[in-house]
Image (tube, rainbow, N blue to C red):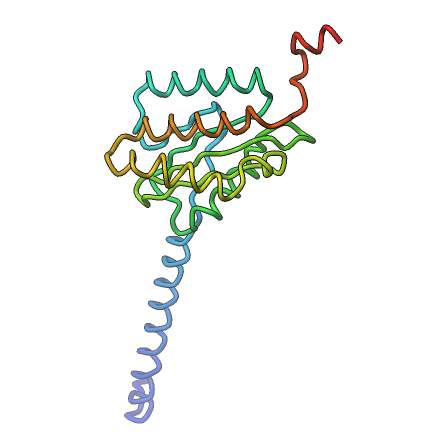
Length: 189
C-alpha cells in the first residue's frame, strides 16, 4: 500500500540522513586508509634507495664503505632514502625503522640510520643507545645542517649522503666500542 502523505514526508529526511551517514562513513574510511603509515622496507643492505636517486655505482660505493666500516669498527650504519614519511613526521618514522631493522650489535646497540625523505626535504640521523655519547643530537644536527643541507639544496644527493656518512664514521671511530668478534686483535688475545 502506498505511504500516507505524513509518512512520505517523514521518509525523505530519514532517507537523506541515512544516505548522508553512509557517504560520511565511506569518506571517513578513505581518510583512515590515506593516513596509514609508510611501510618499513626490509633490511637487505647497508644502503636502501626507494627513490632511484643514487646510481648503482654510487650505491655500490656507499655499500662497500659501510660494510668495511662495520667489519673494522663493529658499528652498523645504514642509509635509507624514501620519497616521504607522511603522514608521520620523519622522527617517528625513523624510530620505527631502527626498531624494525635492529641496527647494531646486540648488547652494544651501536647502530645508526641516516634517513633522507626526499620529497619532504627532511633528513634525520637516528642512533642506538651505544652511540648516544658520540652521535649526540647536537653532533647529528651539525652534520645535517652544516654539511648535508647545503649539498642537498644544490641537488647533490650522493655528495650529501657520502659526506654525512663520512662524518658519522669519523665520530664513531673516536668512540671506544667493544672489539669486533673474530678480529685479528681478538685472535691474538
